[in-house]
Amino acid sequence: MIMTQRKANPPAPARADDSMAEPTPVTTNDRAPGESEQRFDTLAWLLEGANGLLGELRHNRLGLSEEFWAHARAARQESLLALRAALDAWIAHSESQEPQSTDQQKRRKRRGGIPVDF
Image (cartoon, rainbow, N blue to C red):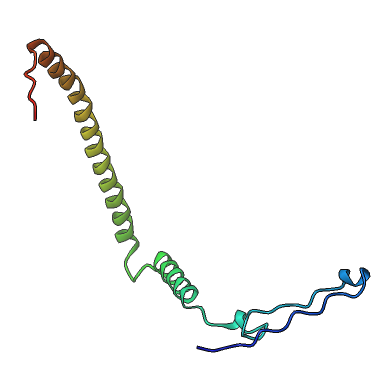
């Protein structure tokens, strides 16, 4: 563990005018003032690399023809439309189940229930 000496507090001002004097700056950083900005930041470096890679992939055609990319866009659109159709069918199925469950509850009420104590 590194031990550092604490500086003594400055003496109290002798007069009331001196209380408005500039306070002495206190530095808690062990580095020189300009050194912290020049320090290597691994996370920033990784983020910059990831952004560069994504930008390159976005603008690079990977040597494939324009016809390939047109079909890839169409395939992506078709898969999203298929997902939309599946979600619409699922929503319609769940909405049709709601009236059936209320009918079942009404029938149960008419039949009466058997109380079971646990």
